[in-house]
Length: 261
Image (cartoon, rainbow, N blue to C red; front, side, top):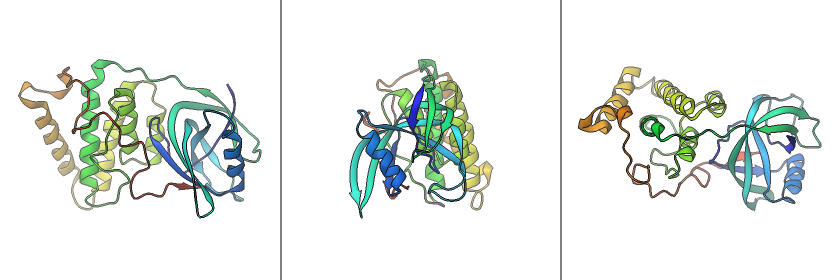
């Protein structure tokens, strides 16, 4: 445990997902100047429960589970600092410290979620549900990620990336970030994504329509041998949709300008 520079945001950062920031507040410019003296240059990201990202009279309330962001690129836009970072290990806030001038906290690392190859059918199911829901919902609303976004060939990283691209609310994302096992992460991801799909398409299609489409896709993917959850096969690199193993989530999603602070 130790003091850690913190960057509360209005969005959730998952492990192995990119983060784009436009930094202009003096307190966060000070923070960046400090952390860039160290290698690797890291800071913690937590979701704001209430209050504003920018400094103001309203005090922030923040969730206690977050992710370490590691700076990978720096630049300048209109006099502001442009930062690209990538999510790493998960952390839990033990104690918030007085701002100096930026937020800081005593944190501890949360355990890594262990991968088991028996979870591969569940990962494949989660990927199918997430991609199908994005494809369906994007017909009606603008989403930050495309249905064909590439994933890592590493199954643990891919699981977190699926959580990152799924069209979920920030509160649902915090629930996923706090998962205590890889099975719990994937199971909740499927359930929450199906629920989100119902909400996103409620004005144009019934929940039964969406569930039927996903169920039909799952049946097709299972093939003649039966249920996908009983399939313990592997296609070699463990990825679908023509991915070559190199994730397309190394950069910020297209069409978004990152987070201002």
